[in-house]
Amino acid sequence: MYESSSELAENKLLMLYVLKSIKDPISNTQLTEIVLENNFINYFTLQQYLCELEGSDFVKYKEINDKNLLYLTKKGDTVLSLFKDRISPSKISIIDKYLKDKLELIKKELTIHSDYTLDGDDTFIVDLKALENQSLLMELKLTVPSKKQAVLLCNKWKENPSDIYTNIINMLFSENL
Image (cartoon, rainbow, N blue to C red; front, side, top):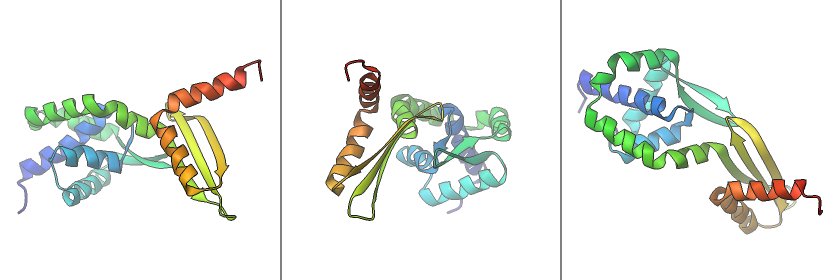
C-alpha cells in the first residue's frame, strides 16, 4: 500500500538526517544498512527515495578513493533544517542511539580498505589502504601465492589497521634496520 505524503516526506527527511548526523560522505550500502536495521523503510522504497533525493539535488554522489559516496548537499541541509520537526522524535532518538553505537565502525569502513585480485600467474595481489580525512595515508600492495593468504591479510588489516600501520611506520623510521 502507498504511504501518505506525510510519511513519504518524513522518510526522506529521515534519510537526510542520517547523512547530516554522520557528517562525512557514506556509501549507499551504509545508508541502506542504517535505515533497514532500524526498520524504517523497505529496501526498494529506500532506493526510490534516494534517487528522488538525488534528482532534487538534496544528496549527491562523489567518488572518493575509488568509492562512490553519498553526501548531503547544501540544498538538502537547508530543506532538513526547515522541516526537521516533521521527523518523529522517537525516530530521531533511534537514529541518534544507533549512530552513537555504530559511528566508529561506519567511519572505519570508510577509512580502511582491503581487497585482493587474481594475478595472471595464479598469485593474488592484495591491496591494503588507510585513509585519513579522505586522503590516502598509506597503501600497501603485496603478492601472495594463495587465496587463503590474501583473505587472511585482508581480514587482519580490517581487524587492526592502526597497529599494523604504526608497526610499519616504526620499522621504517627505526635506525636498527
